[in-house]
Length: 340
Image (cartoon, rainbow, N blue to C red; front, side, top):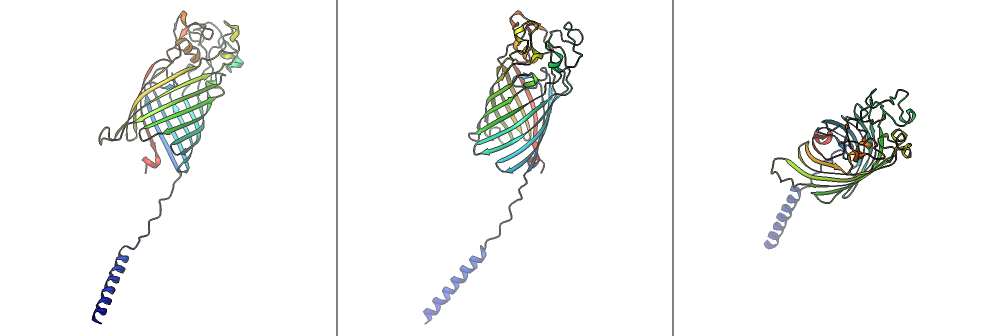
């Protein structure tokens, strides 16, 4: 009986210890997940020694400043809607005051593929119409065009001409493919039915690549680094009669075939917190004569026999499309990340 009593006592003690242990590790109710806020805003600014767009200077190889503001709505973690407003300082042939961009679209992400579909409007307010080998109707200049001697009445000495408005819009589709933590490639496609208001359609396609250095490259300094590049081609159709050369070549009285071209850039960037310093080389395969015909460069003063062509009868040359080095310092923030 004593043995039975001792066994019962031991079992009771063990049971009591097990019960106590169960009570000690009783599950604690998990806190509720943080509320999902679908709204965000991205904004930033930049200063650069030259504003280059698809290999062509937009600032006459002079410094430019830029800024943007982009509200975003995240439908879920993989789908984002956005609209944006941006501005850049420029120096156009038609003396437009600035570039103002209005854009919007959707960014869905599927695994390693980040897509971006949207429409981008480029507005150039404050432009002036000068010169024309077309008509005032085609040029939309009213009745005050000076068709006189180049260099007189506001016409540039090179005889170039430009519309009052260069505004246009493009639809675009892009995909960025993240291969791993360091490598990414991208494919981009843009189309405009009236590129730069030339009367010519425009189609731009490019491929991009980016290598991001490991976060430990500069130790614990917080400085990051990347190397990136792009190769693209800008296809262009035939302009309207405003840019025709009918006075010299009747075959192009209704417009000139705008020169299509290749463009490329490669550079290295350094990041620290919200700041990025980007050092880049950009170039195109446009000749100086074709560049003059495309841009209507009002600063072109040098003419050569070798640059005379059906679309550039004056033989003037522009350096707006050649090799360029770009230094750009930018700051980019989002409200959810930087302003909490």
